[in-house]
Each structure stands twice: as structure tokens, then as C-alpha cells.
Image (cartoon, rainbow, N blue to C red; front, side):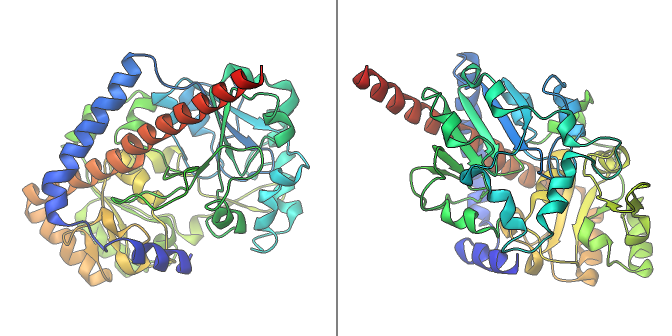
Length: 413
């Protein structure tokens, strides 16, 4: 992660320029929103299937017939591309892990990354820590799904083998490599995995990366502001106004290293939500720690009610938790030395340590106009960079590849 954060910060300025904020961002956002809205009205959006393997320890674990919120709420860890479930006609599938070479990206988490033995990931088929079932309860064979019902299939770590994708030449096949440190993440920037058409890089920044044509800057947390309010049936207006927002949500890795004294100081700004190591829960059968889920009821409630989301310590991060917090309505403050997405911050929300965090919170509390301006800025950035622009880019790429495939099929007929 440290390598990635350094590389990412080298590609883009540490913060976005005030001129870009003031003049370009609102115009780009409006233009992208209008374009996507027109496509929605004309019925020009692809039907999407989101797919993961039954050994994947992240994202959703539910029936293919689950509602949008039931799907997101069922996550094993992160909330993931939640806006796919509000913007597109889509379905989610867990599929049985195939032995084809292109479906083995998940093994890179064991070798060379050495996160855990392969058996640890495979155990998720039979039992998920904290639940009475495994992912095999909902897993389907890739042979049993009618992929022709979809225009675009998005896999996590390539879930559908080339022998299947070849049977559906009219479908466009795309994939994430979930772990940024995995060899397949970097190699996919050069050429797509066999049987796939598009690679979703997870990147998002004011300036697009200079990529090969098959690569799209498309975030893992494809989320817009208000998405969790929409999914849960809460008032979306609360994202913009939030007159009753209070308190501080402490980023997960920071919370695990925060001192009692630091948390007491934060309490001066309202209720503090911080999941510490002593708050961990363990599976009654296996004794394994149950991961903290970002969509757990108490955590999501805190995220949707807190005024601030803060990071000043812990390990370096890419920024997906920040996107989630901004989408839920928080203003995010972060130490940019530990942050892979510094462009989400201005001087008012960039900190360097805990004392600078306290000073920044005091300034924001004393100046509501500053708070509202910074919050609107972050929300515009997330809307534009994490949904509006990547959604339009994905649709453009899907249309381009579909036309190419149709032309090729006509020639071979």
C-alpha cells in the first residue's frame, strides 16, 4: 500500500487547485450529470450483472433475487459499487470458483501476497465468520446462468472463464482486480485477462490516467452522495442539509490505534464512533475475528449521522472509506501522508497529526460557511469522479466494444 500511495501521489497534485474547484468542477459535474440523465431517459444504459466467486471474502453474500438494499447490507466487508444498484438495471451473482487459469486471480492473495493460505479463502464457501452459512448457499455454476440476459458483465477478480465468455460474443465482459498490490492488477493495465474486454482500474482522480483503450478509471466504491439514503429509504434531502448532524466518525485503522485521551478530546465535537481492537467480536464456532462491516447497522447509522469522518493515524489507505463517508454525508479530514486520494482535500480538511486535526475541527465548527463550502466541494468531487464520469466512460466503452463485436459477427455470418 505504501508503494501505491506514493505512486498515486506522484501522478496527481496533493490537492485540487482552487481554480479547478471554483470553475471547472461544477461545470464538469453538471455536464456529466446531464449526459447520464439523458441516457437514462432514452433507455441507453446497459443491463449489468455484477459477479464474484464463492471464495471472495469481500462484497455481498445473498440470493440473486435479493433487493438492492438487501444485497448491499449483506456485504462481508465493504459496501463496494453501491451506485450500480440505484442507477442501472442490474443483478448480483455469486458463482462457484472455476479452475480455469484466468479465474485464479484470487490465489495471488496467498502467493505472492501471503495474506492467508488458499484454504482460508476457500473456507468462505462453507462458513462466513459470524454467520450460520457459507457462500455456497447462494453460489451458482457459471454454466447455469443465462448471460445473454445482460449487456455487460462485471466480475471481481475474473469470475467467468473464457470458455463461457466465448459463447456470448454479444456480451461485453469487464472486471476489477480487487487487490491493488496483486500482480494481475498491474498486468491488466497492459492487456486484459483472456476472455475479458474491459478492465476497471479502481482509479479516480481529477485527471484521467493515460491508459490503454481497454482500461477505464472506474472506482471499486462506485458511489454518489445520498446512495445509502436512497438504498435504505431515508430522506435524500438529509445529505444536503443535515442540520442535526453531530459528532465524529473515526476511520477504522485510526480507531484501532487511537488513545483514550485522543477520543476524549474528540468528544468535545459530539458523539464519537470508533471501533477499537477491544470492540472486536469473534465467531462462536471457529473463534475467528468477525471483520468490521461498513454496512453494519450501528456503523452505517453513525456514518449517516456524523458531521465529520477523520483519519490521523493507523496504516496508509487508498481512500475507499472516505468515498463511503462523503457519500453518507460526512465531511472528511485526513492526514495526507497516509492517504492515496489527497485531491479530495483542500487546506481546510488536510491535516498532518492529531493536534492539527483538533485545530481544523475548531475552525470548521466556528465557521459554518466554511464547513458547508468544504462539504459541498467534497460531495461534488465524489459525485463527479466516482459516479458521473466513470458511468459515462463505462457506457461509452460498452457501446464501442458492442459495435465492434456486432460488426465482427456480421462479417463472419
